[in-house]
Length: 299
Image 1 (tube, rainbow, N blue to C red):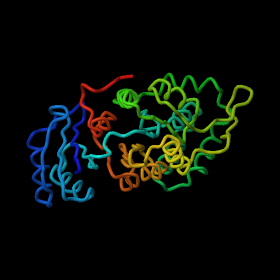
Image 2: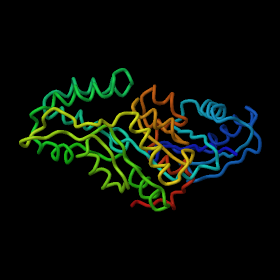
Image 3: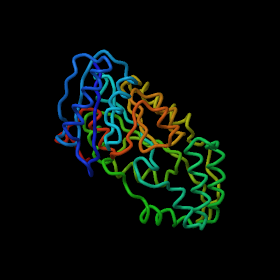
Image 4: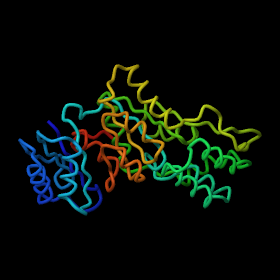
């Protein structure tokens, strides 16, 4: 049994019954059997359960039927739907910004750094080399700017607090793993309620950034290994894991999870993921797990 979850943005056009019926019809036309639907949240999210199709075929059928509608579609096996572990990226996923770009703004080099960040997230540059090059441009920036940047620039992605609070409340392990910096990651993790966090450490001396990142670097492979190692240590199968991110360095962990989600992501990341959130916020990942609005825990 598979389930296709249709989710409209929490703030925006409603999910209409006609769209739900179009999804059902498209699945039936593609060869699905036992097609049946129900609402998770009227006007916002609904499930269509069915048998007889592979996930990619079903996803393509429903997305094709919806056309340009602002509706996200997540197709997955019903059996592993309620995930036991979440591994999430931070920048442009759990928060709305890229912290290194905002630090670069205080150093007067944002345009250049943001351009490199964008290329790295598209997978066009080696992540570690791109990180070293960008951090080198921050040399001499006062350490106090880190807190200023956090206070002035960090904004949390809607739905994140409910996502982490609800999964924690239902016994899941929540892990924040980032190619960003511990100064920001530790604070974001504490605010949202992540149980574990891992990130890079900026070198600081005499009250200023030295332009160096301590080793080892949190690379794409480190993100993947974090997911797999934490799962093994807790007896959790990868099929029971959810991962979410936006950049090319998130692809290995997205591919390692039973449900790997590209969140408002770069094209290469979307192509690698078995689900994509293009329109909604992080609460879509709660609906994808079958949580109804009344089940959400804000933490």
